[in-house]
Image 1: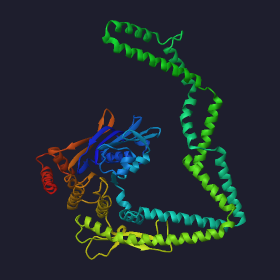
Image 2: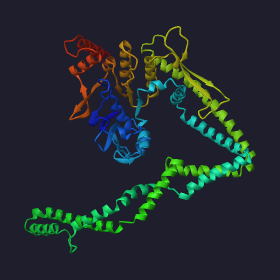
Image 3: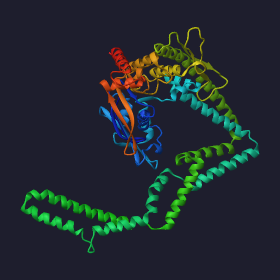
Image 4: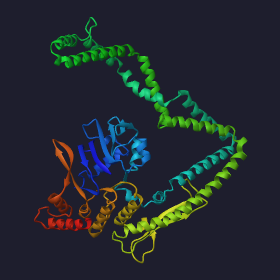
Length: 554
């Protein structure tokens, strides 16, 4: 589970540290108070896209640390990232220049690595996610996720890509001579443009490191000379005051042994100063003040930048494009020689593609029935008396794509006597939220932390209490973090936090307060829309709600 989250200079948060335990954690507060910022910060440290515009005004960089229990991380990942303790910490930083850093237990990693680890730790449900449930492409993805068909889909996609390549090669053979020559000229020109520059990933990194140094070579040399002169006097002896102090202390230590350590420390400082002076001397000698070298480096950097704009976005992508162009040129030049071989390979690939698509269809059909049953079981207690939920899988053998030949769609009937129809046609916002909660509960069964950002959209009253109880039940086997506006959901939490936005010294800040006792009752009363005074009807209602949910939680 998530043990601790520290957020620095993220949006309107200067510095904030939150500790978490087991169960359901609820964040509440007025609209616009900054509740979702906590969720965004957690997403950032787990590899979500970072944006310099999120860095707090006046700060140079933002930083997020997240400490997790390591027990539920797959053994393979623990071994890969040398995680041996009970907990481990992920850290991510981003500065205003867009340069980011990522760490696992203090060891530098890529942001992709954070995302790789994060997918085993946290499942996010954002405010927009329930709307994605209206798209059938998402239904296919969710069914495959439930059935653990990722490997089968990847294998089919690979064969599909091979078949597409073979089709392109055959089409190239049948091109007119004029069109073939036009493409050859185009591909050859593009390849020549890349090869003329001989780009490399290492060179680009070196340019990024060396350009600032070369741009400021004059100022650097001036400062290095000044520092060197401060360390050395005209005769070349080490800084006289330090040298004299060291000599005095050495003599004093002979008379008082208690000063021996201090004498050694000053002597060590003297050695350090001498080393620094030597390093500065070498630095001055190596420093180049060659305007031509700077012009050449800037020109080279600009050419690589233009190349990335055309064939990138990164140099690695440019190099990959060059390899692809070589293959295309070769295929065009020798197309006729291989036509029959290509046709045979395509026939075999299409046959294999059909076999894989049929096998995938059968597995999806089996999984669809199980998924529909589990989702129905999960959402029936959420205010649906006679719900019907089905997962329709329809195969079109004539149109096999990279995910197979199946179209998957969720069908839904919330009321008795109402036929199953596509979810997008009949579901309200509240119904979508409850269906998504059921889906997340089923699909994220192995993920230790679930995050819901306003799962209560479109619901209230008794249904809100049912959703709160469902979230609390989900949190028995995992940790759940939830942003909510519903008092019924907040009352079901194991831990409550109130999020407030304040203006301190003309700067907007977010504060988060753990709530217990009377403070919690006041917050529930506020969420119910009433007076928070402890003698008010809203306060009494809030107390009754908390008492009722306490009984259910026990």
